[in-house]
Length: 292
Ligand code: BJW
Picture 1 (cartoon, rainbow, N blue to C red):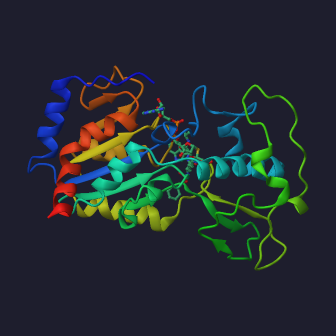
Picture 2 (cartoon, protein in one colour):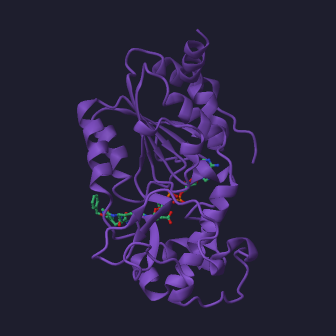
């Protein structure tokens, strides 16, 4: 990816704002573009395919109902890739910001890959709005089993993702996996397990939604960082409008320019490169205080 060229006036005006007394509270919304420099695919656009399937079509309760073996192979591949990936400089910049005690800060991530946590993001300031690849839940509605942190890879012998070819031009059929080849609940022993992610049409965790609402109500958000997201999925996208409507400023970090947006700071380019540059003054404050 080409080196991003941030116009110096954009950088200066952004730095002046984030170091001023007008910027006390920052909210960050993360999307798949942040993990793209770590080698993980995005959802939409040309990267949004797993083999010949559109990733969006597999991220639904209907797809799991229809063919849990196919959906489990997709998520096993994603777990395997996420475990092999490393957090990039963008994850690290945000993690450092989360340790700056001078700023009220909250990150809402739509990503389920666990890379922010692995970059040492302050866990009190991180909300996984769409769940986690490493959370497992029982599908039996009378069973409450939930494993919040399961990093086994593979989960069953048949879900060994390292032996499968995953490129999008691969039209070869995947093996059909019957339920007995898929992970089952250790508590009720009958229910099929599913990934603890939020699929389209499903409710988000009220704990996460309440925590976000509380942060936005208790503090006036002075600045929202919109990072590597298409902003198409609700309710995540609605937070951007709420901040704008309340008079907060917005900074967008994306490889694509939005010509219709004349109000926000736009950092065009790979956000693993633009974020460390943009957040440098606030990160330097953390590094200085840890050196004292
Ligand atoms: C780079 C880059 C680089 C690339 N550097 N940039 C109101 C209005 C309209 C619709 C709805 C509504 N309310 C609900 C809906 C329906 C639905 C919805 O939003 N539909 C829209 C599509 C129209 N929403 C829901 O169903 C949600 N549920 C819900 O609202 O329930 C009601 C409720 C609300 C609150 C409380 C209780 C109940 C659930 C949504 C769940 C979304 N799930 C998924 C799958 C998660 C599991 C998994 O990962 O498999 O989440 S779908 C998918 O999209 C995934 C992502 O998190 C999400 C967002 O995608 P993201 O991250 O933006 O990725 P991309 O690929 O779209 O964009 C990448 C961007 O990065 C691009 O812009 C690139 O240019 C950029 N980029 N490389 C910088 N290096």
